[in-house]
Image (cartoon, rainbow, N blue to C red; front, side, top):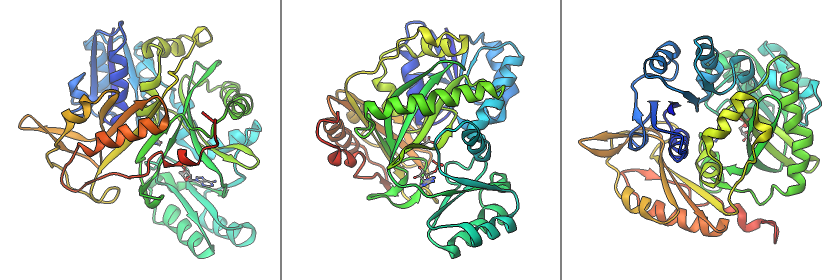
Length: 429
Ligand code: AMP
Ligand code: GLY
């Protein structure tokens, strides 16, 4: 098969790496890709939002399957464009990707179908939001821009002062652009966070192994929110009992709700969950693999990814036996100094080969380019260093050993990715 991947980050590198292992895969292109992805796929200079050009490319090159990694094109309707042109594509249509594209939509869906989530109100008028906060809010309270905001449109406000400033920033100053034309105000939940990615064909849903992200830039969960600074898988806090509850009360009900709404969801549903004292609740949905969740989940997956994606498209997922290795993985993101605010690009990267040569280690590129034949930094998140091991402790040790071998000017990483596993209950793995 000839396969086209749409996207340019570490997630797409992990997708390309996994797809390349399929005996059915003959050729991979990635649009626009990055220099690291270029080691296994041919990068194509077309942007992810140029749907017609991508479809032209797929047609001209007889692409058998297009895999969309990113949220923007999915929410924007890339799958609809491909399907209208008779091209085979993996991912939800726009009317289903709205599960990620609008927080107001997803909250209303959960309320209508009784799927556990934080209590909330939706507003399209800042004055109404402020009035509600004045009368009803208890603090802390969570403000969310309705639309896509690179994972940054969520503000946790400790008091009325912060909440007022937050409403102004989201709805009046439009700090997150049009994403802030509506907003959701929701109850603050406490507990441990876990990400569960799943495959669905619109009827059957098969959850993958669990993972946990670290969203803040600094050690000890300090600093600004980022796209994600590192992940580990599985989460020792996501027990079999919790998984069973989630399957019955959250995962299957979400797929059934989307079908009942005339929005059958085919592709990946990423459940961002909070394990609260009242049980697991949905924090958010995403309509794609997580980045860097993909970098720890895919290296543990035993199935041929192309087979599973095709089963999602064809509605035959009930015949798939999804399997993950009985091991663990940790991914440490190496970022450019100044990320997530401002940073320089173009610094030469040392040590990539030494890190990649370690047994069970994979260096997935998030933002790199080639200059005079050598890899240089080209983004905020630059590399994701993944290691697998027999358990989380071993994987963590190896991931940090590998990350230490890599260096570039002003590069940094968090030192506590997966540290939470030290607090995991005895025998929980
Ligand atoms: P989201 O993009 O909705 O996942 O939100 C980003 C992050 O904000 C989450 O990973 C949580 O850490 C935090 N967050 C979002 N909603 C809530 C909530 N209702 N209570 C507590 N923390 C939240
Ligand atoms: N790592 C979080 C996300 O991909 O949304």
